[in-house]
Length: 221
Image 1 (tube, rainbow, N blue to C red):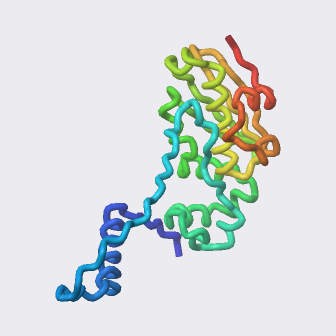
Image 2: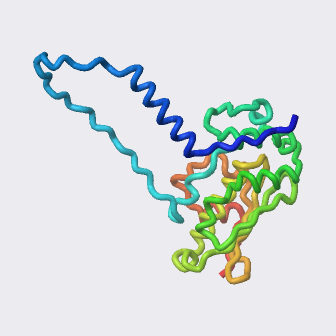
Image 3: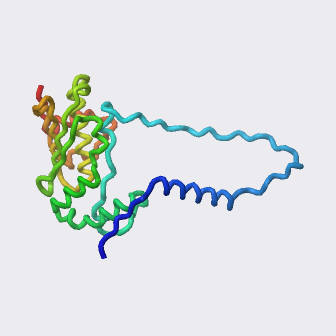
């Protein structure tokens, strides 16, 4: 029997969730208070602390990254073991897990198209391309934006390089990612980010330029 793609409609899912919450509220609602009883003194409600996360931008782009896809787990389970991954996407992972773990480049390309790990970065570039030249390496090329290059070109290119590498390493089980930036029709930066170089790093306090140079980055003026 062929695998069936499951499409989840966010609007329908949200409506169902609201209905379930309403039912639960009716079942567990406390009985009405006796209006004849003496009024109770109002109780102070605890103040909830609100955590405001900084907006993602060039100044902190490298600090975050996609969650790593556990392909071994995807191979072993037909349903999301984390309870968070979209069911349709998990079925896609499960279907392709064996081929991915065997280093099948066709499966790699299909995962890159379907998962689109660099989709969130499109607003920071004039174009991004991805390819899988061999089972242990991915490559990405992005065209730098004029306005971002003018502000701090080296930091911008490095921020993009680190973030692209992190997202691609999270997507597929390769050992390294080569990132090339182009500007004005010429190469502006090239670096190879290895998985072992990015392990156990505190990206919140990391200089993307220093890391990119450690990974062999060459910047062209």
